Length: 393
Image (cartoon, rainbow, N blue to C red; front, side):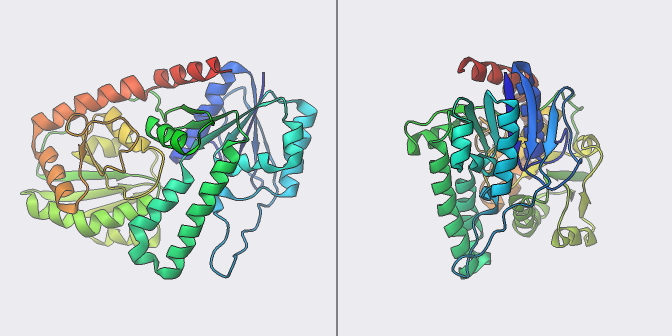
């Protein structure tokens, strides 16, 4: 089988969750045929490929997002494909053939809108990995941030959410199958898109060795992990520092220190390093030392979509997790069993202090979290999901 994967994102063994998900797709698809990755991206070699997988980079400029009505531009995460990009793609497909045309995220699936693509790919199976529900993430961003957006920017984000919903519905009708991260996303999409086919392919992690439990000490080490190029992560840190961390320090009888670990923190997040109770590291070579020192891992996410694989990563390392309900959405967690969920600043602070000071409760959360990782989010879980996917074709 000849498999063509189209993406604007770059695959990485480690990096942002979206980059790792693409890399795992390339690994998984190799079991079923010859895989060629076509990157709609400026010239670059800054990406990773599994052995045996090939790639080509278009080197073409992306479509310019021109503002409409002086207020908004088409959503960047659903950027149209240019005529030149379409011609480049179809030239390869026509010459090499294609049995499975796999689009990674909504922006890549817009290649299917061209009439020439419909003719060229008529016999190919067309699959989209939606990864995040972009329209849902846009709605949530408005709900979480409208007070700071201002009227004009709020209007822009509302228009983006509406546009994304229309693009999603239009593209779903051109597909043979759409992949999503969770059963929650699948269920929601099936309700609003009857007749379309959806399949769950969860975000997963490779082998991770569980770390020894961190016993309570003189300092409560609180860890947040997440790429700072993703706005919901930046907003989560700002919310935690402003509303939750002060409450934790009041409730706890021990000194508390927050570690923020993730690539590309903006200036306002880096500025937190001026405080003696917060450390912002930026990108690091290895996360293991930070997980090793952590008493508790937090995920105070207020918006966004998809699933937070960093929660599963923390569970795999053997660290208790406190999260908002949105932060843990779609992961199949159970509040009080393998995670603590809290949606107000005081409830979140109380959960952090409780788990950091109660070794028995922390140990129970760690054991249950590790079981969830092993059964639903390890490499074996991904292999099972791919076998189920292959059976559909």
